[in-house]
Length: 106
Image (tube, rainbow, N blue to C red; front, side):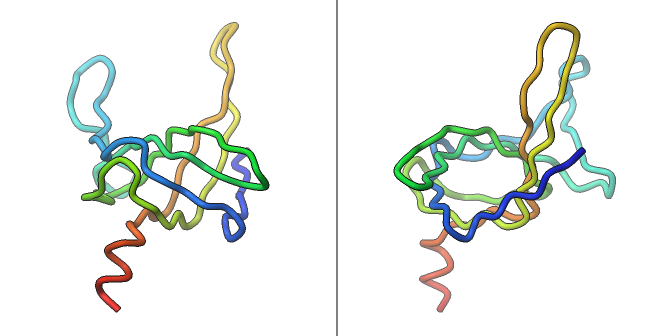
């Protein structure tokens, strides 16, 4: 089950620039169900005095941005997963954009 996350009260910063997601076996670029290339980036999510580094995937290139860039994350979803004896949460966003670029445009 995919779980939508409310991000309006959260602050996000880039840990690293986005990188294109590659298929583990073929090393070819991965795409979403619509054929858009998938990118992944590490974000620091700040909320209520706590911080967490999370990897987030997004369809389409969200960059460019560098470490420390403040970001807007839209449509963030969390999906729990289990593979054998391992489990975790994967994150996917509809859109990730630099707040610096948005401010320059306005």
